[in-house]
Image 1 (cartoon, one colour):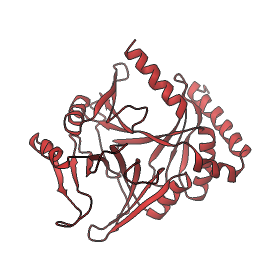
Image 2 (cartoon, helix red, strand yellow; image 1 turned 45 degrees about the horizontal axis):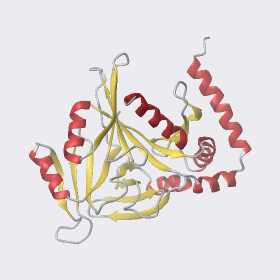
Image 3 (cartoon, helix red, strand yellow; image 1 turned 180 degrees about the vertical axis):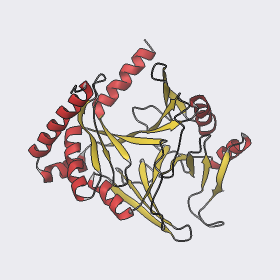
Image 4 (cartoon, rainbow, N blue to C red; image 1 turned 30 degrees about the vertical axis):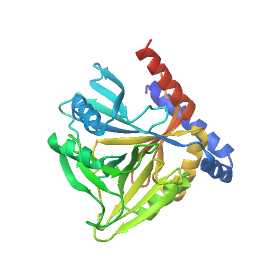
Length: 316
């Protein structure tokens, strides 16, 4: 039997991660992760037409193209778009597979992206004028009532975006929303990994409840994950659209040790043991949460180095 190089690397990394997990006391790991320097880096999705998606996000949302690269041999292209530089902003990674047999399927498990804007009405009208799909008109939750003004619209592939009328904020791309089957368990999972429960909302008239979790303390000043429980829904279709969210950490080995403890108690699993990715020398670890959503934890220093190296190649 021939063992592939990648399989050997993963096996070695798994053994190392088990050693680290045993070497670090449980209480120390869980205490450390509460103090770790976490930051939401990127959400990755698959799109049906990269040029079409970039045009929509830049013209109507005001995002910028931060990088783009084609891989003809592998038959895919990708790009990174966002409201600001990757060094400080939460961004979206777009991948377009050039394979007619492998169709894009967004599924039903991923709910939507959310971003803040200072002029929601103008943005909605621009999208409408271009033939875009507005799924919820601008306004507060209760017509004629008070509260945050928001709207929903779909991009050309059908990904849903929630627009929120807010003053200028450090992170315009403010949240991702994931549909979950057990809200309490999901909240406990992410709290155990260092996030704070920032707010919960119950909307009986809309038949759903949400919990907002993130690393900050102010809902409008940080990126959050909105965990949404829809009444009486017992299953979702995963699809192949939403891939994962990447989050920065100062130590992927300690983070993996903490994740391993949490998965034993709450659920989920580590799918990539901590260590450097072959060929690009960036340390990561990856896990699935209690609903099967993937998170990749990336070494903060390595992440910034990769951005710097890419920019040097693009602008020699």
